[in-house]
Length: 77
Figure 1: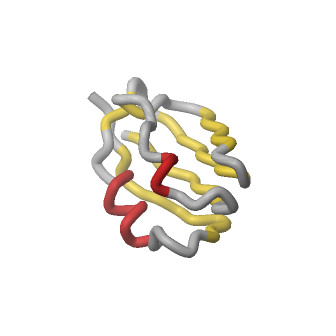
Figure 2: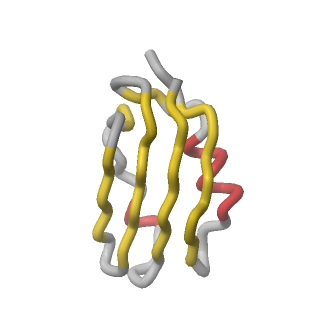
């Protein structure tokens, strides 16, 4: 199965979860297909995901505070 091999933070804001922790969670995550994965979190736990799908589905959003935001691009090979 394809895995996340790199993580790039285009934008990141969180008071509770460090970039490094999120990066370590995403690296080596299994996806349904290779390609470029884009993750955008807007305030209010509004997550947009484009490209390969993370397996299992994302269930960790409640770890972020309500006003957290990020824009992340991942390479999946």
